[in-house]
Image (cartoon, rainbow, N blue to C red):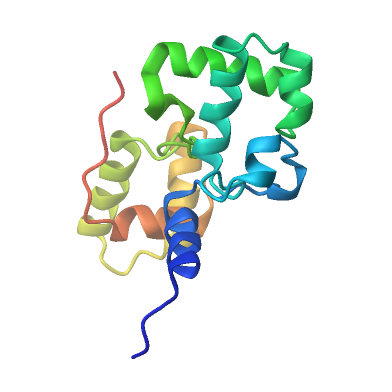
Length: 157
């Protein structure tokens, strides 16, 4: 198997870690245009340099936002995240739900109990039983995934 070129490896790693800048063309800062060390595709490097430019060199938020291709609120959010968590605060956060919000441990255990009592019970019948007992609408496929999951559901705190 041929060895990948260095830039291609970096691109793959940036994609894998979620730090690939979706808009590298919008970065117009002089360092990113003239110096190959500064990579506009590296979101973490862009965000750090953006904050450094404002904090150390005193460039205004408006100018920093313009040169780094982001909005002013993005600069403020990056600033707050950096102050709170350091460099790791500049990493992108996972979007969307973080955990199951309808299928709690109680609901899953209730359905498992129904299935134990009647192994021939269909998923649609289980969805209806959950609707009647808990008053929540659960998608059939979500219930199937929850029942198939090896991971134990976390108890809400």
